[in-house]
Length: 541
Ligand code: ADP
Ligand code: ADP
Ligand code: MG
Image 1 (tube, rainbow, N blue to C red):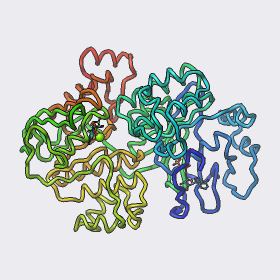
Image 2 (image 1 turned 180 degrees about the vertical axis):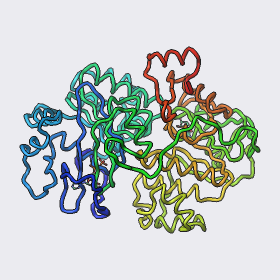
Image 3 (image 1 turned 90 degrees about the horizontal axis):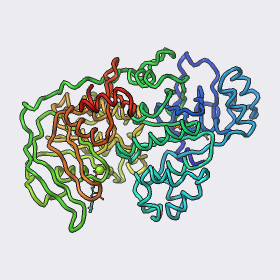
Image 4 (image 1 turned 90 degrees about the vertical axis):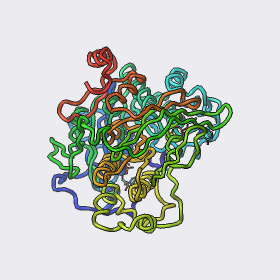
């Protein structure tokens, strides 16, 4: 493995499809006869943050290998000898040719943040400080450490720090290096919204102030929107072929992606469009209460984290979004509702059947996916279950695998499916977007929403992906407090009031895209940002 594609190359599992007729040109690179082929390359530009929006397994790392000079593109002829001149010829007269010339001359150096930070402790043992000091090539480490809030874990062994800390350490390590071209393969996993914003702002500043090129792969659309100056959409058949489009404006790239149709390319990449609606709530608070719960208090012990919950009502057939920073008690609340923890004060003995997907997915029986799911529901395999659950969660291709062999994203999808397949009064999903790429997220969101609507199901969803929360939720529960010390959960509120509450703490404002109604983060300090802050309208302007 090379540090980027630490993921398993699914060679023997791929299914080669015929390429769309539009792709009659030779690819940039093909790994072998009937093997993965990449079409198109992104263009790193000094002083700019370039985004790639697309699923995993679509050739992003392959493209970066080429842009880093570690792989000489074979232009589809996998038997040919490596030859940069042919490549330069192909890109004659383009900006990419200028970049490649500098690369071949040895003028380009690359720094990378690997996708799977969980694997860093396997490759490095030592303290955070030791890891980071090795990367301090620009003398900028202290500032980066400070900005990303890494100070508290500087003296801790790398194997003992949490996922969110590891993510920020990995980002700091990549950014502290002296390079022309920085490749950041996902920046938001394990981070809460405030941490995501901080990372995004730091990357943007480094690009602008130091004229660095940043290429970022990201599945959180709100962050991609805030962070990037232009966007390549990547589409195709993961594992078989991938196409990286020419750069688009960020707004068009995201809008076209959500629409499922790329205009310049005249290409449909998804059968249906993703719709954002300015929330006309599906049910109003005049619906029937599913449960009234009292004020609650839970502490993990003397001097440990404590949570207070304002009593409230969950209504039948509503989707209640739950947002707040890491370590503030969201999962603790989910466990209280699911009956896995007992509150110290307040009584939660409602007789409800609850289907619960915990944050850290606990499926590790030695059992096949199909056997596991058919043990949960009699609907397994019916056409309605296939359409509503299996298809949008892309389960067909992993049905015959063992639960123990699944990747993080695969486990997540099986766990969401298992949760939705139960007969329950209340569905509780703790961070369903974790480990999912953007396609899977968009489809999982649609699946959860459609399920809730078709079954009049009541759902509570904890997540850090604002788009997912916006698309799903009818109302919102907001957490605040001091992470790891004390948390407070508000009574469920209307979306607008809840988002206002949440975002004013973060000092972030959102507007709605005029064309698609999707939420977009306002540029900090822009006229809209200042106006909305004055009006106290942090969310729906
Ligand atoms: P992404 O970064 O978008 O997840 P990659 O560029 O890592 O995608 O991989 C795209 C596909 O290329 C993989 O699904 C795999 O089938 C194939 N692939 C990756 N690396 C190699 C390699 N070294 N040799 C042959 N095939 C590879
Ligand atoms: P969130 O889901 O909002 O990230 P959690 O509810 O998981 O937060 O955790 C809140 C705080 O409680 C964290 O500081 C966490 O370390 C602490 N915590 C969680 N479970 C336990 C436990 N079993 N014993 C002691 N502390 C715990
Ligand atoms: Mg949690």
